[in-house]
Figure (tube, helix red, strand yellow):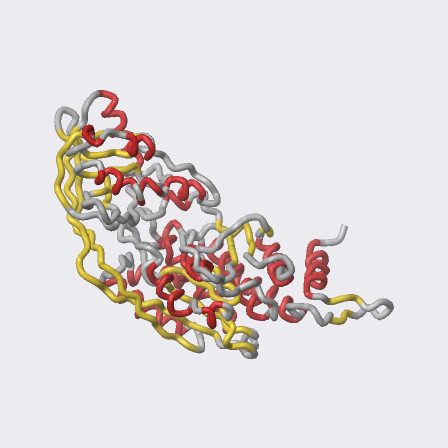
Length: 480
């Protein structure tokens, strides 16, 4: 049985097209090799260097400490843009610039709620992004599914507070979040259409702590928005127990709402390719966060990981053949607004094919366990090579898994190819959009593993001469 390093070397040689010449003991490159053996060797060295480098964690610490929470449109949003510009320059990128992203500004000022009457007690909740303010005191009507809410007689809900109580399943890949998403996105509009005075929901999250999870909701155009908020999981359980004892009245007061427009910035940095500078490998995170914690796992970690990956590539003896672009997207949290602006500016038929592949780190700071790309059959040699260099990091090649990250999805909808570096999200929704999303939850060793993976991915994709299948679509599909 061969030692693992030798097996890795043989696999890399095969993937790079290096063939042993019979009788000579030497290798020669085949003409069809998409990545040279020297580039694969450089990627392996880059991987090991990244594992010992603390740049990404220092960036996460800096962003969450010096800037803190970064609600889109806030003063901290503006400071975060200046922070990102300065860090990119310090990290050795060849070009740094910004592109404007304009959006309505939502503000949170105060929020409180309590059970009133015989069992009076406070409740821990947080307003959903996009909720209007208001004060409501009314009886609760509980539902254990959106289907039940949709089927309810409007007469039974008029003037009441709708409470949707659906637990989210914990999962490594975050699939529980997708399944529960409609509670926040559709629930408030359904309740408003039926005449409810306010909307409460069980937080979309898995934390056992008494913290509530926020997130954006948007009301349908044909309804009048109503105050809408999420309860911590222990408080949702408490409310359900109280309801089993009899009718429950809750008083809530939310001071929040839309307040004009704001222009933030996508912050973009690039390492200029030595041979094909017009071709772009894009890696990204998003600069904004919700305001309850400090946005450490969502998504200071993604910003730090991708910034540091580019920095490590910048330290290579030469630039890769293609350009490597790193984007810190604006306002992901309220609807991928920075990503949509970027896709609008860079997603034309004459540009989309030059974005050869993109990947985003926006699922916390857990270790990456899986890799895949959208490259079609016949254009997967580079994906295969990347997978082999990632394998020593404990990353499996899962060719039936993955999807574009949120901020990559608008480009993917226009035909852009994507890479997936799947992070372990088993504990991610303990922190997502709540007050526990702070730096102490970030593991420096896991961040280093993530940085190594992104550096390898970006380096080899940029060194390759293979297409990953990016091509403009005849008709754009809506981004999710």
